[in-house]
Image (tube, helix red, strand yellow):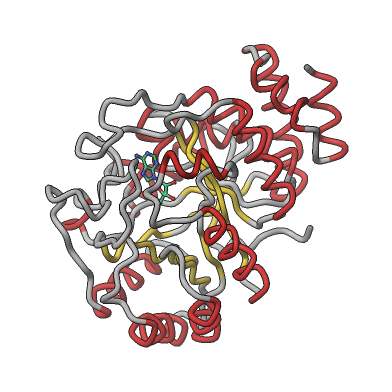
Length: 346
Ligand code: 5AD
C-alpha cells in the first residue's frame, strides 16, 4: 500500500486496478501515511495557507430533478427564494470587509437568471472588486453562455461531474440529464479559459470503489484546477431519503489521493464534511485540502439552501465567524489568508 502511495506521489497517477486496491485495502495506518505525504506535497505548493471563498447561494430554484438533491424541482416542500442583484452586491460588500477575495455565486439552474441578467451581475461585481476572483457554480449552460459570463468578468467555474461512470450517472439523475452533456460542459469551460473545478459525492447510492477509480481517472485526464468532494448526505424529501450517508473517513482518504494526483490543485474541505463531523474541516485540511468556503448568503435564506439534511450554515461555516475559522486553522498549524488564492502553477 505504501509503495502505491509513493508511486502516486511520484507519477501523479495509478491504474484503475491500483486505485481500487488502495481504496479497498486502506487502513488507519495507510491513511495516516497518505495524509503525511499529502501534507508534505501541499506544503511545497501552498505553504500553510488556507484560502477562503465567500459562498453566495443566490437562488435555490432549479429546473433539474437530481435524485439526491434537496432543491430538486420535485421537492414541493422546499421554500424557494432568489436574491436580487443588490442583495448579491451587499453580500460581496460584507464579504470584502471580512477579507474574502473570492466570491462564489452558486445556485440552482434557475431560468429567471438569464445570461444578460447574470452578465450584468458579474460585471457589477467585477467593476466594484477588481482585485477579487469571481467563481460561478450555476450548472450546465451552452458554450456561448459560458463564454459570455467569462467575458463579463467571471474567472472560475465549479461543476461537479458527480460520477465518471455513465450508468451510475443514470442512477443519480433523471433521464432528462445526460452524462455526456455534463462532461462536454467541463471541456467547454476549460477551453474558454476558466479555472475549472469538478468533483463528486463520496458514498452516493450505488457507488463502488470501481466508480471511485473511474472518478480519479477522469480527474487525472481533465487536470482540473479545483476538485470538490464531500460525503453524500440524504435529504428527507428526495427519492434517496432512506439511503446511507457517505463517510468522513473515505472522503478524507480520497482527498489525500487527490492531493498526490494534483499537487497544484485547490481542494476544499467541504461543508458536507463539516456537517457530518464538527472537526471535518480541520480533518480535511490535515488530509491535504487547502480551501474552505464559508457561507456569505443573507442570514434569512441560509437554511433554505438545503441540499441535504442538517446542512451547516453557522459556526465556522458562516462567513461572519471568520475569526473562529482563523483560530481553528491556527490550532492545527495553518493560516487563513486574505488572498484571491488562484491555482498554483502546474
Ligand atoms: N449530499 C451531498 N452533496 C450533495 N450535493 C447535492 N446534493 C447533495 C447531497 N444530498 C452536492 C452535489 C452538487 C453540489 C452543489 O452539492 O455534488 O454538485
